[in-house]
Amino acid sequence: MTDRLHAIPLDREEIREFIAKHHRHHRPPLGWIFDVACGTDHVCGVATVGRPVARGLQDGHTCELTRLASDGCPNVCSWLYRAAWRIAVTKGYSRMVTYTLKSEGGASLRAAGLRLVGEVRGRSWDCASRPRVDKHPTQDKFRWEISA
Image 1 (cartoon, rainbow, N blue to C red):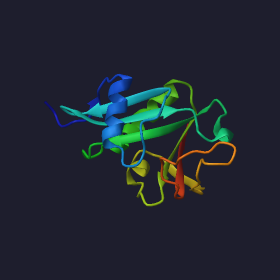
Image 2 (cartoon, helix red, strand yellow; image 1 turned 135 degrees about the vertical axis):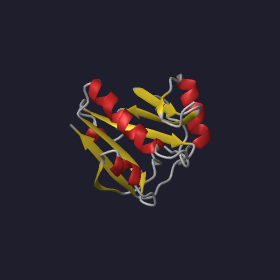
Image 3 (cartoon, helix red, strand yellow; image 1 turned 180 degrees about the horizontal axis):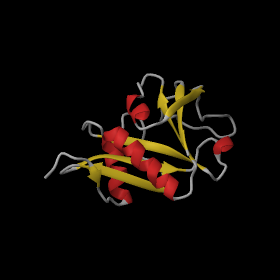
Image 4 (cartoon, rainbow, N blue to C red; image 1 turned 45 degrees about the vertical axis):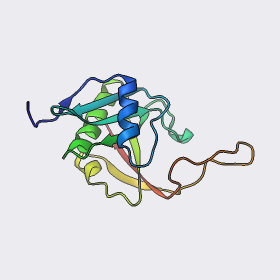
């Protein structure tokens, strides 16, 4: 056994279960393009990457890290951000974006090479033509990006 983080293969159901148990404010996504998990002698964290939610970013060259969940082990988040970016580049993506709540610090994002590129106003997905119950935080967010 080692304390060094390394990739751990998990299937989609295991990824969903980990996110459901450990993510602070989101449910597991319905789908994604690829995922990555890491740990030491147990799974410490997972990340999922999919198409950008914002239509304006859906250019075929941009992916979005949609979920990152950790059990609190040190350095897991920055390890996952870096690993997700390396995988994205091998799949032909030239940019990866992700979002954090304004109340979250962002140290692991900076450590992984992402940069803060802007603020996004929080909002509800609920509207008259398609009523919905919000199951996510509607507060303002920061957008982070890394590009080749």
